[in-house]
Amino acid sequence: MKPSRNDNLILLIIAIAVIAFLVGRGMRDGGEKSSLSAEDSVAVDGRKKYGYEYGGSRAHEYYNVEGRNVERFFFDPNTADSTQLLRLGLRPWIVRNIYKYRSRGGQFRKPEDFARIYGVTAGEYKSLAPYIRISDDYRPASTLFETSEEPRRAKDSLRYPVKLTAGERVMLNTADTSALKRVPGIGSGYARAIVNYRNRLGGYADVRQLLEIDGLPEEALQYIELGTPDLHKININHLSLDKLKRHPYINFYQARAIVEQRRLHGPLRSVSDLKMIKDFSASDLKRLAPYMDFK
Image (cartoon, rainbow, N blue to C red; front, side, top):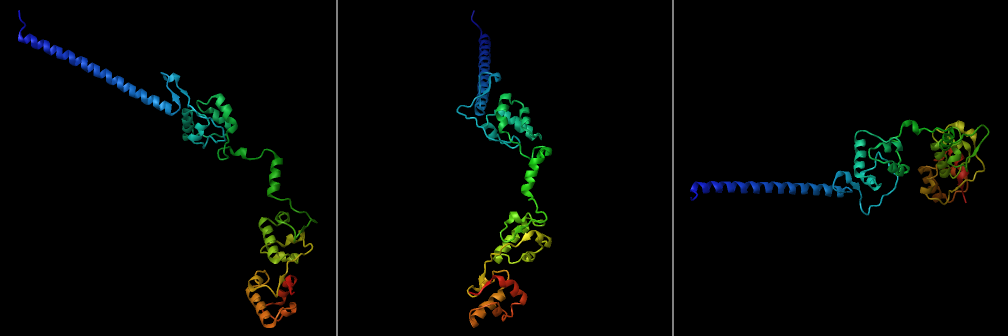
């Protein structure tokens, strides 16, 4: 008996359905395999990028960067960046833990705090501890004060010189700023002013010249002795107007008058010749006399 046309049509439909089912299943399996491979590839690449190698499961991940030299240098875990932490040999996920700890307000107040970071081994902490330096900004305020009196006294003696007592003196024309700061009432500012004024004058001829320094306490003079004056004198007959007026006791008009007097009457021979110049008062000539040279 020959199969009818309807039978042939039914068989054809069944065959097409079977083929379609098989083809669809194959494509689905292939896509899943392809997708899984891509994900695995990304995971492996990512692990290699951050110093991991993949051995089949997460339980076999480990830190292993070829050719990498672990360095040792001083660092503050409160401020060290990821590059510095990686150079110290810390694993990337530990570096991330440090960043998370800091982002949540955590601070390292002493080196031992670094050991509390999750993942840091005892060996790593022992190796890094000598290089941890905590900035004063992160240390407890109580640790900033000296616990011993002796170191504090040594520091204070450097910042605050021991002052002179009654009967002690410094030599005005030879003392440096350090010696002058030992005088009661004289600090760094006055000490510098005394030395600067001494240089401008050419030396002090009298201790009371110090009172010409604005605000200097008169009580300080009892601790100061003139010593042997070694004055640098000015040559009245040879210096130009500009150089004459550089002396604290000669102003521009007085310097101009000296130059004009020399031009009209020749060299000056003594202080008496300066008395003819109206720009000089008797007190001006008295304080200027020790500094004048008429040769």
